[in-house]
Amino acid sequence: MDLKIIAANDILANVIHSNYRVLVVLDRMGIKLGFDNKTIEQITRENNINTGAFLIILNIFCNNNYIPDVGKNFEFIPDFLRYLKSSHHYFLNEKIPAIQQNIHKLVYHLHDSRTDLVESFYNKYIEEVTEHMDYENETVFPYIEDIYDVFLKKSTISSPMAEYDISIYGEHHDDIEDVLKDLKNILIRHLPQKEQGKTRRIVLQQLFELESDLYSHTRIEDEVLIPLVKELENDLRPLISMT
Amino acid sequence: MKKEEIKILLIEKSDIIRKGLSVLLIEKNNTPLSIEQYNGDGDLLHYIHHASPKILIASPSFFDQNKKQISALKEKYQLLLVGLIYAFQDPDSLSSLDALIYINDRAEKVQATINELLKSYPTMNTHSSNEPLSSREKEILKLLVNGNTTKQIATALHISPHTVNAHRKNIMRKLDIKTVSGLTIYAVLNNIITLKEA
Ligand SMILES: [Fe+2]
Ligand SMILES: [Fe+2]
Image (cartoon, rainbow over the protein chains, first blue to last red):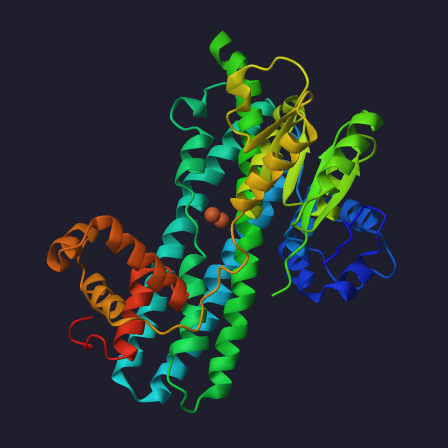
């Protein structure tokens, strides 16, 4: 598929027409609909969002083949964090529970004790994802905010880097999509063909959506956030050792 | 099945070298290749994105300068990297590359290098086939979802751990399930083990 790279002077309304799923991205960045024929640059300025950061998020979201290049644009960091945090909120409080309800409904109506395993499989997955995102929310993101403050000279160089470093996160950043892939296959190939075709179809659609949303989320963490924070750490390190 | 065309992206400033190499690669190659050429002007990322190549040929210094993006690409798309060498290179800087083409290589050598690389190219068909599990595989699946390690399974069945691993990979490929808890569900649904055992 030959997808075009989204640019600052593109009209945001057209971007939505070509991929309606970006609506969740706008939501996460606090952009309200009703923006007429304005370009991405105009809209992001009005909303106090960094245009470059927004374009990277949007392009990764729309295109699996897009290769982000963030260089040393440290000013992108706050908007990346904002996007990742509100995605976590969306996953944990909206999408994942909605799927849980439907899986419960599906399993309940199958009247087969063996299929209960599907529900416990998903519930175990929820625990895993919650733990993963809690760690990011409580440890990784606050650390990044701390060193970004040092960069802005808002806080004195007390070196949060003495105790933590982004490579610790990078090395332990697990894939959280494998379980979803298995679940999809169990529903597509292996669960007995009884009624509940409609619920099963809805669950599957939701799983596909969650998987691709999580995929681009993880790409932002791995291919954008971690390399950018590494650069920032490298720039800050000499300043810290001077004090 | 029709052989899939393999895309190669050739990054090289010199027109003579780039065009010459491109002709060499297309000539007498039994795998269908399509070669995209890039001379270094304009937005490279844009270019890579449009070409979505499977093989990237460039100078080692190019790979070095774009390390981060290249390693991300390599991992995600199983991209193969070929270094085009026309001066002495520190061997360490070449260790991450999949193959090397030297400027003095004869035509046959260049073609052989690429053919060799294509042989190692991961097969396109990674999805499950419609073969059912063999009885041996079912036996191993049963032991696996009952919590046995590869070593324990090997001992129980008097086979090598290596063979157990090969079976396990085949089971996962056939069912398209990659986690042990996913396999457990499959095993219960298909009465390979009982719900009590799960
Ligand atoms: Fe995350
Ligand atoms: Fe993550």
